[in-house]
Image (cartoon, rainbow, N blue to C red; front, top):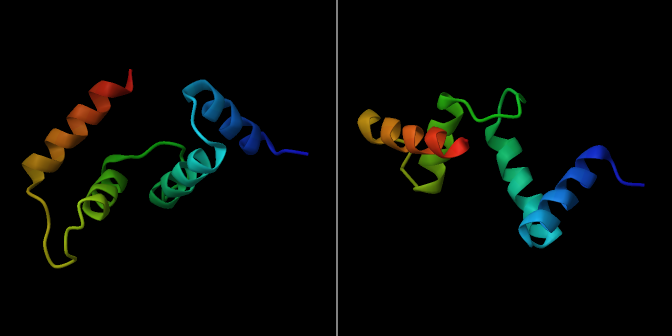
Length: 79
């Protein structure tokens, strides 16, 4: 039997025409950055995600204005 989460992943995969394994990997990555388990990526979690995706070295950081721009774009695409 499938768990509720496995069923949800399969629904998402079917809806978007994606392989189930690929959606499972996206979910795993999402869960890694959703540190508080809220089911949403909050701003501080987004900063960590962005730094990882862009491969920013640990001793450097992106300008806060640039991070805020990415955040604003992401939030406006949510709806």
